[in-house]
Every structure is written in C-alpha cells, then in structure tokens.
Image 1 (cartoon, rainbow, N blue to C red):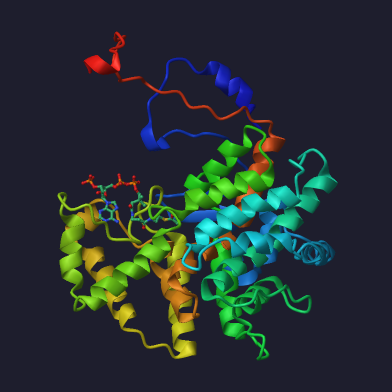
Image 2 (image 1 turned 30 degrees about the vertical axis):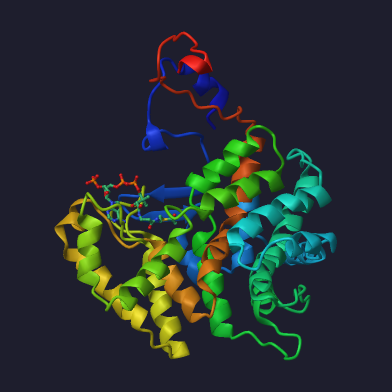
Length: 401
Ligand code: ACO
C-alpha cells in the first residue's frame, strides 16, 4: 500500500480545489467507483451482485471487516449486535426533551452523540475485541434509536428490539408495531428495504463519509465521528435529497402536475431551484444504484399494487431530462435518491424519515471508513486555504466607526 505520510511530505505549494472536485484525501481499499463507466464495487464485489445475492448484514460485515463472513461469523455478528440493542433508559429522558415536531435527523444526530455519554470509550482500533464490540454496539443501538425518532414524532410508545427477528425485519417492527396489535412485516417490504440499505451502504469519499474520516482523524471516537456524519448527510445536496425529491414531486402535483414548468425553472440560471434527485458529483453517465433501485421500485409498486400520481410526475421528469439539452450536456441523470423516496413512500415510511433510512444504510460505510482511517494511522485532516481578505488594517474605536 501507499504510505499517506510519505505522500504528504511530497506536497509543495497549496492547491486550491473547492469542493474537492479533483483532490483525493486518502487511499482506500473499501469501495471502488468509476463515475464514467457507472461501476460501483464494495471490496471488489459488484453492487449488482451484492444487491441480488447478499443480505444487508453480510454486506456490513464485508465493508467493515474486509471479507464476506462465513456462516459462523455472520451468526456471531448478528448475535453480538442483538446483545447490544438495549438502549439505556435514561436516553428516553433525552428524547422526551424534544418537541414532537423536531426533524428526525436532528434527533438522530443528538441521540447518537448522547450514546457517547453511556459508552464513553473512544475505541482503540488496534484492540480488535474492543473495536468489534463498539461496531456491534453502534449497529444495534443505532437501529433502535433511528426508529425512536419516528415513534417520538408520532407520539407513540417506544418499541424494543425483538430477538426472534432479523435486523431489517426488526426495523419494521420497531417503527410500526402498535402495543395493541401483533405486527408482521411484509416480506416483500423487508426484501426491498434490505436491498436499499445495501445500495446505500458505502460510497467512498462522499460528504458525510469525508466528515466521519475528518472528525475521526482528530482521534475523536467512533460514535462522535458518526454523529458528525449524520449532520453532513442531512443536507439536501446530499442525503437530504431523498426527502427533497418527494417534496418536489408533491409540490408539482399540488400545482397541477406541470413537470415542464419545473424543468424550465431548473434550467433558469436566475432561479436557484434545482431538480432534486438529478445529477451527481461523480457519476456522469448513470448511477448504477439508480438502475437497480428503479427496477426494485417497479417490482415493489407492482407487487404492493400501489397507484400513485406522484409516480407519473417522476416518470415525466425522468423522460424529459433524458432528452433535454441542458440535462444531457451537463450529464445530469436521476441519482439513487430520485427513486429511493418513491419506494419509501410506497412502504409507508413518512417523508421526513427518508434521510434517517439513508443513515441506517450508510452506517456500515461510515464505520468501515473510520476504522480504515485509524488503522492506516492517517494524519489529522487540516486543509489549507488561500487568504483573500484585507491586508493589515488599523483598529478603529467604536465611537469613530
Ligand atoms: N438541476 C439543475 N441543474 C443542475 C442540477 C440539478 N439537479 N445539478 C447540477 N446542475 C447544473 C449546475 O447548475 C451546473 O450548471 P452550470 O455548469 O451551467 O453552472 C452544472 O449542472 C454542474 O453542477 P455542479 O453543481 O457543478 O455539480 P456538483 O458536482 O457540484 O453537484 C450535486 C452535484 C450536488 C449532486 C448537484 O447535481 C445537485 O445539486 N443535485 C440535486 C441534489 C441531489 O439530488 N443530491 C443528491 C446527490 S446523490 C447523494 O447524495 C446520494
């Protein structure tokens, strides 16, 4: 491998690259992405094959520990995660302090930070047992608190992990089980969710993952670094796009369904409006995840018998953008978030929970990248700048300003 510390010594003058459009920040063995060809692989396995044949926990293990687990390893992983799904009762007091209207992403970030108070170890990545325990703890508790952000917003009592169910199935019962009724998750929904989580599990140095690595580079603990990643994911130009897509489609529908009008708005350089769910920093031909998810969306909607006018608008936008000069010349294609919101809606997940769903999927990627960054002993992240402000000025007292 390449020694990142040696690379650093070779750097000379400062290069300016706002948004890191061309600058690599690290070497990584986790995810391979070719934006021109539309290729995405986790640890060498194609996303198409993983989405088709693996389940989410297997993919988590693969990303975090580097290899697909044996049956025994997978069983142990699941058992360990289950062991840590109880969340300290005092965490409920923290949830009680939020208004019902709080956005679930804000609550999720705060609760993940709060978990640190109950699990104060900063996690030494060189201690394999300690690391394994921290990974399982975070995966277990994160799923539960993610569901609690929704239960809180609905004013429902909080649910607990059910040890007889798998990880993804558990999420459905944590979210939707009511005390008065037995809950049985629809296997089609569980399968679709599992696939969605796999598609979101890692995406190399995106904004939230870079945040996790950056925060972790100061040797802040795993939980603290992930909490920062959640905040980065929340933004509408990143994970928040899935919520923004649905809100945009709803707005177009409420205003008479005129997709062309919104296409024109997106193209107007005097209008800040962007067509949400279109474009990607790296994929300039197609987003391979969008291809898989579009197919999954069609299947799920057909199987569940969902008829939704919003879908018609999505189709119109998709078709119009594919032949429109503005979109074609800028290589703006529907990204994964254009379709994920449509599936979440069909599964009965409320719109402001969409980005939380993304966070559940992305958690193993954040963990894997944090672990890799620490194992490679990367230096603290500290970008330089080119100063463009005033030269030296004399101080003027307040009565003379
Ligand atoms: N609608 C209209 N125009 C767009 C859009 C869009 N969605 N996306 C990019 N453009 C235009 C820009 O205005 C710019 O035009 P110009 O060259 O005439 O100035 C050109 O396309 C290039 O756009 P940039 O902003 O330079 O591309 P960048 O790589 O910085 O941004 C991003 C990528 C943030 C994803 C952008 O395409 C966008 O804002 N999309 C909408 C939000 C979205 O869907 N985000 C989800 C990303 S995927 C994810 O996080 C999982």
